Length: 200
Image (cartoon, rainbow, N blue to C red):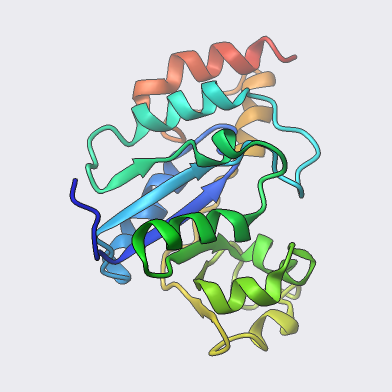
């Protein structure tokens, strides 16, 4: 794929495991933002997560299988190659230097509410087009007014369906011997179930 002078996005996360909500979100984001391609970047050592159960190589393998039919999606192992803590600002700067243009950075509303605690978040606001996707109902009492203060100051909000799927719930369901049919791509279903069942 020729990625020179293209409009692109970055979607990072632990993906522990990747699920169908991630795939749906990527489709909506690429369509709404008119992206030519999207980097999906599994975190190597996320600073805001205490535990990531699946190893980096396993999570990356699942992502490649999940997105195998969408040639606009590129699975990047940059954060593992860099090593150390996975700070978003460093990932943004790497891709900005590579493409000579800033990216659209997709982050969940739950993560965005804590953006003031992110490493160099003020610089991040200036160096990426931050696009927040919904994780809560609009009348949710937890809506953080400070997040709304950043609208039109580097943060915009993606119009996408509210998808009530989480990797945490999927892991818990597997460990509880409950079905996750329809929650993750069928191509990785058996191995995801087998992996987390061993974590009980």
